[in-house]
Length: 329
Image 1 (cartoon, rainbow, N blue to C red):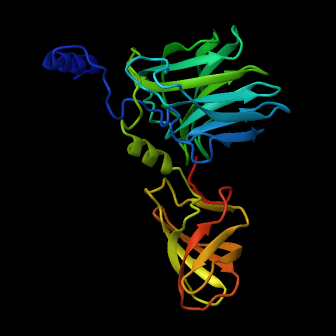
Image 2: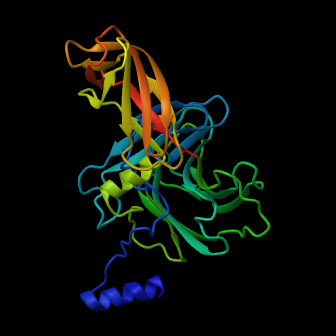
Image 3: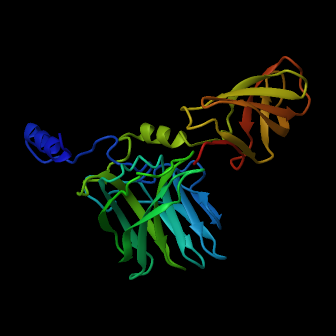
């Protein structure tokens, strides 16, 4: 059954037109910019780096780019029927900036089929041109990238406008698909002006239907993002463990969702500490990763002296401290 027939049947059953809010319709995770695990302002971005979840920015030349979460005034989101909360502002200081969404597996945007991209955008200065490109990245050891222009030199205004375009995903016949293949939807915006985006959607077919998130729920969208990245920076305590020596504390982490691959681990901040069951917290002097799978991570903390055999929990003593696991493409 086609989507148009499915929607028509639904309209008949309900006695009126309905928006096709179907989970899985939108291939873009975090198209409404509701999830910012790395912080609500990421700056500077002077090379490829993740910002809002699933969104990566790149600046040409010597420019730096700041990507920040902006908040809609209630009832001011640019489309009726969807009360958007946040949008993204991408601001470059000197050169052009690329802002792109990364989709796992080059086959996700089904080859040889038609897809429609839609989004709401505005620019700091009227007349700035926006370019949108679809990139098939065949991964490590795979064939060369294939680029498809979707929009070329689309003039923007200072007010919210919905843009859409339909393209056909190129065939993968004869291509070699390597590890970590992906699809990128890349926006290119000019210098010294900010671009603002909201409601980015990629769907099968030739019609831009009303915006919906990839999963249709807040918790589903967060879980979809955390397949690729998870950051924990609780200042009230998380993850229990124990001291197996007087200065070595083990904490075992259960990830909130199964990650794409066994992730890499990193920590930031010198004030990560372990709360101690028989006294005050112990400052962490070193962090060592242990076994990591797609579901669990074991971390060893070297701390000030405690008593072997006692339990405890991990605390990020300031809001700038964090532990993170990345399974990004």
